[in-house]
Length: 438
Image (cartoon, rainbow, N blue to C red; front, top):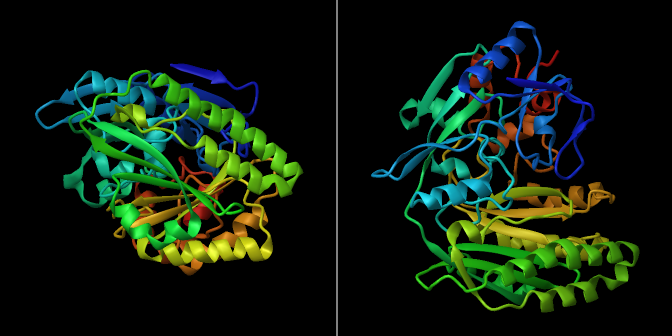
């Protein structure tokens, strides 16, 4: 097994989390995963698994040991009659969509970043914006996990609590090596972008939500504009030369948008003009792609992000309150606020656990003073019972999380059983879960 010294600090994608682990292990087999976990347990060391580094919180922080599953990738087996696939946890989401398509399969839930790993996205609670769909964990029908004592176990829906706790576990219930996903036949999506005024969108938010399979809102409070990005099932042929659309998307996300962000940081008075230009750039004809090509973006420009899930029927009032607060306090909302939707889920730590939710996302450039901006809007979301996305910034304590997640204490108790020595904890996670850390 490759196990290397790290000459420079590890950093996450956004650049707001940095650490200096002594080693990083790159297992290529299940036995090597077991061996590294047993070594850490026997030597009383801690270990965190790293994926694509897209978490904005210190989930992967470690000053002792990292493990990367970058050499443990690919589809291991496919059950065509049941449309299920066993996938190794280090597989990147972009590659997974392509590999499934080659086998006549597709997923209902996709990520926004092609470089996220399947295991990392699952551990952090990836949620798709979709009508009738929820988190990536909702597609899981089984997983294989290695516990800190080195034993490997297969967990399925028949395992009840272990299944519902383990398929969204923050990486503290063992190292998940394989995931069985419920797939479907391939399908196509037509993507549309349209612009509307904020008040108009809020007045018909429920109709919009129910009228689209996938809907994400990009709200620019300074201009009062909303870009509606929708994706719906279609039998139309794939658009010829989709590269032009992809190039436009890449330019808008990585060149035009960031240039305006830097400009408005220096001259906030130009923010409304920037959003009006973005509104013009956002106009485009609908285009059709295979489902796995409709999602997943390449982003060069870094940002930090927070996202809270609130009951879906509370979304209109919460968004109006946020709009009012931004105007009254003159808060620097220079990056768009996103609004997504998800159906109820049964994974214990899912923000959509047992309720339909709207996910309100806040973004800011990492080199700006965003703490006050986030904190002010968190107060609004708290009033509506907001549950934080685990991989995005929040200020919740274990006491507060206990009130928000009905099975929180059950999760903490089960974690104690599978990892009594805290091999898979770091200080951030110990504080988050309200457990000891020495």
